[in-house]
Length: 209
Length: 107
Image (cartoon, chains in turn green, brown):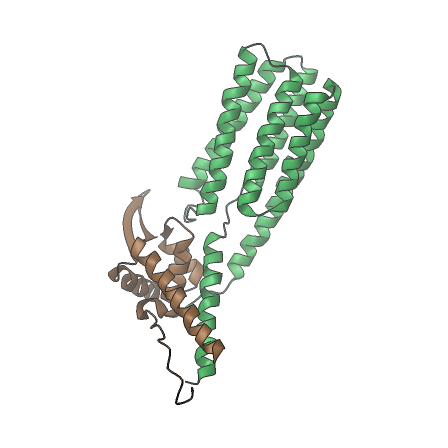
């Protein structure tokens, strides 16, 4: 074997290590639907509370139902669905932890504000904006995803508008932020994941020792 | 080839257990995950069951991976996890590889 082929073989080993590490980190978990689903849930709660005149039960019932559905689907996929052979990656665990922590914060904070009689709509929207901004920002930094960081900025902007703006500005701000950062971003995520899964299926492996 | 007068630098040897392409791919895959199923490893490497099983056994015998077998909904599931020794060995392999390549580039 010549020095050149040996050198090429060593370089191939380096590329193999890099590509396999990237492949291991690549997750094919589907999360886009969660964004779309929660976006729709927010719209249902907003519509019900605005036009049904039942603000507190509208949010409590819709959010509890959305949490139960999300939890049920995640558990089913983990233990009985098609993705059960997907391993847990360090990145996946980090991102999941961020969203779980934010979910728990929501569950603790929003009902507490309601029970304490401090569920002023601007305050609630500011809390939602801050928490979703934090989760999206942390997640985008872990995944190095600028688009998700842009979503975080939109949520933070909504939190600021809700603190200093009028009730109407906060309300319409929530509708717009929800549309772009939940519905549009979620659909974009679903398309991106579907593409990634096709790439994974088409990818060639290392078939020999 | 170097000239007569220049001393030959000590070049590291590559760990033969890790140097095999499939074994190297398997260890690299396992660095990014907590544990992985046999099916997932087969899917990612595109290897056959027999070959994959044999290479995983070699890694297990070397102490680079650990194996856990369990039943999920009455179906057998084999999970592989990289050990601390495996992580150390892969790091040393990469360092050695870079040294060798550095030497080759230097020549």
